Image 1 (spheres, rainbow, N blue to C red):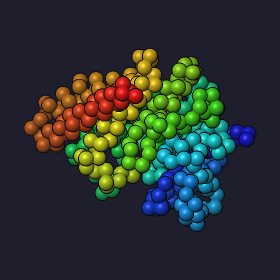
Image 2: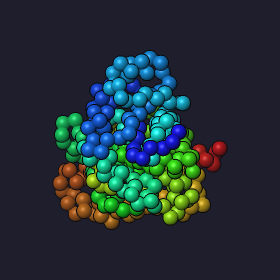
Image 3: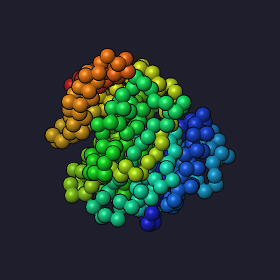
Image 4: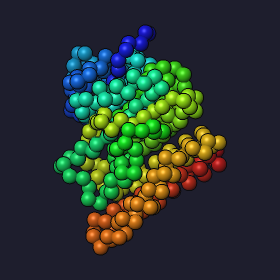
Length: 311
């Protein structure tokens, strides 16, 4: 299949209950200032699910059946079907800013750029963020976070999966997303984007993956995630995912450099600033959340390392 200049967008979903969110996402893609060559909706290989969405979505959206179950399989199916020079990914519960694709794609005029990510802004159900959840932990809800690389246009290790794009040729050169380190149902692994990006950096050290903060998607926050139990579960799997990545690239000292930089930011800035004003309930609550989430990340990492030793 010859690649067309332009961009293909991949959206994946696994549930009929997500219909309204999927339609809102697709509507935002069909109203971009820079229109995609194609929109690909990737579904689990479920005949009933496929028939349901065939009757629900606009005729110009292509439905593609995934080769397996889980987010990585879905994204890979989209990449293999995409016909464009660049492939962009967005979550089914996200809505793209009107200039999202334009602001992503303009960066590819630089031939050394092989990947571009953008800002993922939380879209709260009631319009108000959780008062006890610090912005530093917005990665828990799949959004750009304070202390991350969300506010500057710069070279990054990997973009956030809800808002990322890569040249089609990169997948041909380094392979696809690994399904054994990615999201599958309630197993909240989160390693496919960094693992893939590290492979890109290793094979093409002169090429760049960059952050473009003007490329914005708004990520709807599921009310079910608005509790401490989800935060702790997500933190545990975050640590577990990092252990899997570290295992894969154990001889690369830069593998977890992003995480080390983030931890330094927490200790030298986030924690200190809240300790100085600990008498505010909000600051004290956010300190507690930061501490507990950090503990679960370390526990998840330790469990992942032990699993490797047992295997």
